[in-house]
Image 1: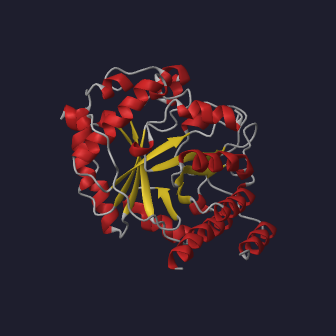
Image 2: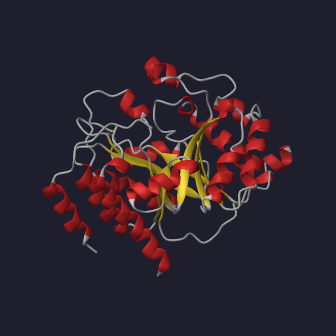
Image 3: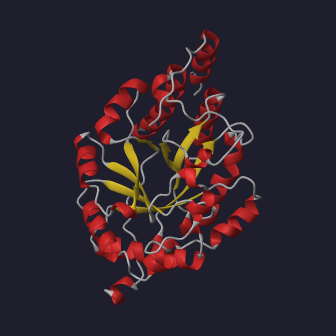
Length: 335
């Protein structure tokens, strides 16, 4: 993760934050699937960091996350057993994996190259069984984890920057095959996260209509999610802008909601985080938040936006707010 040196936080900003914190087989593969269910705890907080450094993150922020998260591309053709073992050794029993069916394209090559379909990873290829061997190996690895794996397959499918966004019908078929293969491998600890982009340039009704084209069906989804990134500048997105999307996800699909990537630009970060705390307090169906300060693909393709290249680990005032968001979830679980 890229880290830039930050200026010292002014005393007035700190006072503002502290005051605010005081606020309260084919026949098998073709068969329908009924995902295993388990009680959903009150809100859990996670962070995109490898488990070997999660204790550093917790110490510097002042609170420990309840899960860690990572991106994993199909092109690596590997399992993540080491990641899972270290996660468990750190005392964590939840993981979020953003599982991407492609070979990642360098952002310098542009959106057109990134959007281009890739042989072997296309929706039709996956639905047709081209990746069955890899998917099954990966699923067996997940099944060995003594905890819950949130599997965020082919995220932000409703956008125009990933190749799996093309062919919505094929996307639905690929999704269902992945679910069946994972269940067939005995990975009953996996919860499938259907995670969208908020597309704030659309009306909520138009956005929901577009989402329906990619919906694989309720029996194949355990959690619905959304990215929640404020890029700043000409894409300055307040938390209030995201609220109708989150409400609509819950209303339309009747599933627990996860914020699958949360981040904000440096300028205005304190108020944005305070507003995030208030937003999730008002929406009890938001069960998980995943904080991500990994390099942003979206930002790489945008101009006139703010600075996302800062680290909460080096920002005491922002860390104080994030700490309270984490503690809110801990207190809710204790009640």
